[in-house]
Image 1: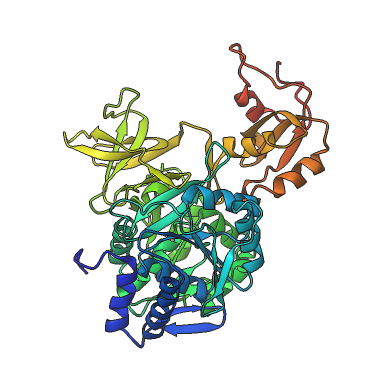
Image 2: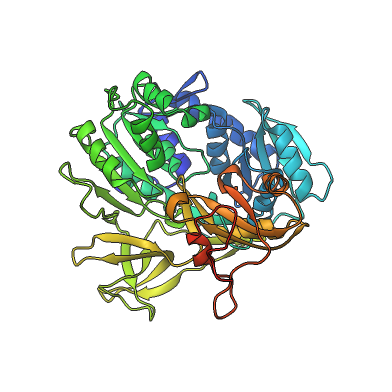
Length: 520
């Protein structure tokens, strides 16, 4: 495969429909679609979207559970020249409404099962008025969120003919819309197809939600090569033993997941006793892998390549490392080097390349176009001179790391309030903003815990409400993955000598209900 392949994501599908028409392209929800069938269905739905008024450069949300119809909807939006935005039906309607407003989505595509939730979110966007609605094929409906005269202007090139929007947690309480072009996504998809040796005989196990950037490999790398994407039922993710059985039953050859799922499959799922026989490549990303478990996987997989992938949503996966079979838990794990044509640099506080620790910067064709705020794009990248003397448009990741002379990168933590939780990037100030918005909360601080409660999120709150009432109110505005594990009522919050809330002290506090060990 060469880089001359088409970079439009829907063109990858069309090309495989010509070269592999009878190959199975997609399986899920009891359905099986060949490439020819899938491409025809996308064409039909694209015509329906055009008839509903979708024009090139419009932003279209896809609000549906992960099924073949949802995949068809994403491809149809792309083929219509729209910017497609997958949305999570498990998110509270108010948060979905904030995503719609920030991204400037003019139309929602919703399935029968998700239609009521789509109406609730659309009603919030439209200040209580109902949305116009129309029926489409495959159990899909369109809802006009914005009137034609209200929809934002088409986005500038290279997204004026469509693209992709994914959402990340934002410090203001508003999810950030990450705007990606066809090329941003396709560059990674084509690289991964080459690096992972995908063929038309392969079956990719798609376990993540379509709102998660891991799925760009599942969909578009498969389409680039004529491989089959197999959609794993969402329910299985909470039952590691069922995931292991599904990998075997579905003859999955390629699997990418967050380390927490791999951990569960090893500790509770029995994969050590029932290794999926068809598996010929495994990869992970999104969070740190427990070193001892990673070492066990290397022995268990016995020659199956195991890749460590790194990259924020703003860049898709941008570095990779094939973990050597003899790697041990006593060695530091690198995130590797940049994928094809992607450049990685580590800069010190003065913005100069450093051999010590600094902020990781990413440049190259996977770097996004910018964020969407109130429907308008803004580009946070800046021009950076790398150590090779070349000035490049680069994204500052917020991750701290160091880079070796041979280009390998090692992570060292974050420079802000963001954490990774089960592969999801969460800004603690986003959670804190939701807590402070509650009417009965006067003061709050949200922290990630250390020590015996590591990986938990706790909210320290000055309020006259009960812990149960606070948590119940938060469920209306935050997705489950962002909910605090504990609500701790406090009379006052500890402060530093400069008068700021002492978040480090809160993170280290070991008593779940009292703060006596922290000096106020």
